[in-house]
Structures are given as C-alpha cells and as structure tokens.
Length: 332
Ligand SMILES: Cc1cc2nc3c(=O)[nH]c(=O)nc-3n(C[C@H](O)[C@H](O)[C@H](O)COP(=O)(O)O)c2cc1C
Image (cartoon, rainbow, N blue to C red):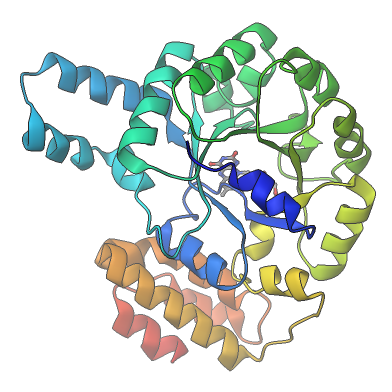
C-alpha cells in the first residue's frame, strides 16, 4: 500500500509548499528546479482522462501484447507528458481532467500502473471555456452528482492518495456545497483556488472561504491564488489557516520563492545570479527534451528576466533561442 505522503508532510508541522499544476510550464525540468528550491509537492501539467482512456482502449482492441504493447503505450503523448524523475521529483502528483467517470477509472489505473506517481489529483478548477464546455474543470465542479462519481471512480482504481483542486465557487456551487457533497469519500488533500470561476485568474482571492473549508474537510488543505512573494505567503497562511500553499505564477522565473517561504527570509538575487538559475534550467530542459525543451523554455526565460533592467531588449532575443548555446550567449 503506498504511503499517504500528504499525512507525512502534515506531521512535519510546517507549511506544505506545492508547485500548483501549470499546463505548458510545469514539465519535468521546471518541477526539478522547484524541488531544488524547496517545493514539497510537484503537480504535473493537467492530462486528459479521455486521451488515456482511448489509448488503452485502442491497445486492448489490438492484438499487441507484452513489450510491444508497453512501447506503444509509452509513445502515447499523454503518458510522455507525465513521465518524471522519481529521485528528483518527490512528491509527484499527476493531475487529470475530464468529465466521464469511466474515463477517469481507466486513466487512474493506467497512471498508477505505468507512471507510478505519489498521488493523483482531479481538476475541478479550470475556467477555460473549451474545458468547461466539455463539463470538465469548473464545468465538473458545478455538477455535484458527476463530481462524486468521478472521485469515486478514481478512488476505486488506485491505491495512491487522491486529491482535488477546486475554486472558491463554480457557477452556483461554492466550496461548502462541494465538500459536503463528497464528505463520504476518503480524499487526502484539496487545493482551493481562492478566486471564483467568474474571476478567472485575476482579482483578490477570498481566504475566508478557504478557512471555512476546514469544517467540511479533514484532509490537507492548500490555499492557492495570487501568492507572489514572502509577505503574501505569510498573509495567506494566516488568513486561510491552510496546511500549505499552492504556488503558480508566483514561482515562474522565481523558483527560489519556495526557499524564501521555507526559511522565512527574503532572497535578493542580482541579475547575474538569476541568469545562472535560468541557464541551469535551460541545461536541464535541453538534457530532457533536446531542442523542443529549449523552444518550450522560451516562455520561462521571459519570466526570469521580467522586471530586470533592459528586460525588453533581452526578451526580444530570448524568444528566439534555438539551443542551449543561444541561451548561454545571452545570459551567460
Ligand atoms: C499558464 C497556466 C496554466 C495552468 N494550468 C493548470 C492546470 O493544468 N491545472 C490546474 O488545475 N490549474 C492550472 N492553472 C491554475 C493554477 O494552478 C493556479 O490555480 C492559478 O494560476 C492561480 O494561482 P496564481 O495566482 O498563483 O497563479 C494554470 C494557470 C496558468 C496561469
């Protein structure tokens, strides 16, 4: 039986710091950098339960067996996206999105057997219309019956600890309604984005909602939304009473924020120190994904230089880098 790492982390009696899921950003290279700076939990980019369902469905229909089938499974782009380095990415949580309990059931089984992360998370908080229209993300949070069925399906198909990520409110459903509806299910953790679906990604999160969640949920509670510096982190921990924090845009180009929160001390880095971190991130991205890793890193590089003197000029060059040499030429 895998350990419930959430409980283990809670017992340490200091805030649990998580890299929140960030599609397009939180790949293995960035997760490893965040781990190095003190992140306790690393969420994957969200992965489609439907994509996993249809992959395995196809393989079951095929006559391919054994090693050949295994190779085919790992060529699947969704599973490729979820691969991780156990040694450098502890504790790793795979996040799934979707709306069909049957898809989630098979996806949970595939993830548990093939990826073997430390936990599985379900996305109830994505407000992007394309996702909501499929009754996934916030669209799923609004549908209490379906949400219950989805969580039940995941729990029945994995022995890993299962967590959820929800919003302060989706449609008419608030955190209290949602958590009361699933109070019979043994979830390990909930990350609450303190903004409503209507707020999207801007505006003030409501930390009193996160605080009130304690009455309905006995597992680990993480507060998320707009935490961009040490002072903000302290404020949120106090106002929400949460067991920890989920950091998202606040650690883009600033992974050392984890260390600041962990040590309680602000870290003032000179541009050359920041460039050094960016170059080490680039080296890791190149090692793991080759040229594609560097192309995908361009958006990270822009975050590293944001706010620095001459950022606009450097940015113009960074968005065109093709390889590690280019990155070193500009930042080395
Ligand atoms: C580029 C981007 C990608 C995101 N991808 C995901 C995702 O895959 N799954 C998820 O649950 N939330 C995702 N989020 C939401 C974040 O995890 C987080 O809840 C949100 O950004 C609020 O935190 P922040 O204000 O600290 O950024 C994403 C946010 C951004 C900006």
